[in-house]
Amino acid sequence: MSQTGTTTRAGTTADHPVVCARGVRKSFGDLQVLKGIDLDVRRGEVVVVLGPSGSGKSTLLRCINHLEVMDAGWITVDGVQIGYESRGGRLFHARDSVIARQRQRVGMVFQQFNLFGHMTVLENLIEAPVGLHGVPRDEAVRRARRLLAQVGLEGREDSYPRQLSGGQQQRVAIARALAIEPDLLLFDEPTSALDPELVGEVLGTMRELAAAGYTMVVVTHEISFAREAADTVVFMDDGVIVEQGPPEDVLGNPQEERTKAFLQRFL
Image: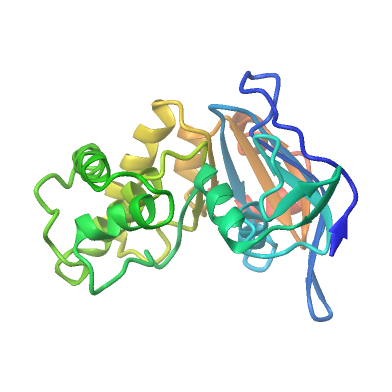
């Protein structure tokens, strides 16, 4: 199946978005989940996506990483449409091996951790770099140890996920996402499966990543994180972007009634 258009590798300056989405639509059967999304994410920007359940937030993230195939529109990450490859000036669905290489641009942290329970923490971190991306094992191990120290889990390399708290497992998942050295980090409700007392440690790690300049798109209900760490807040409802802008505007002075009604539940 072909799609018109060509791929062009975007530059890495602030003038070129890391993520560029235009007219993105996605349906599941008769349910239209995304109804024409336009979104830019600049390098080093933290975009927090808020909205009620069923508004399309997670589906948008999954389309960025080609975990869901959109029905219409297009998304590029650093100028490349993940899931497609150019042949003769036209885009075609890519082979699995090509998609795997393309996904190295994007690290994703899921709601339910998605760690391999039969692997140690270290093995979880080196699986993708070594197995999918050809990083030498010694280099992958050094990188993994450095990342575990970065997320406050130095010395837990030989632990299994079941031996860790939920917050620790999610920090391992964040380190795993970083292990492929991505251009973009996606977070899909990273604290929603955690006990309340464990949320702070994960948000603290995410704040450190934001302060370090990582490009991040975060789907969350954590309004405090959006206020403190976001450069841009996007509010979605019923498959569309209702309002977006700096947190002081969207959270402090929302213009749309749907945004106001949503925020009243949290503020």
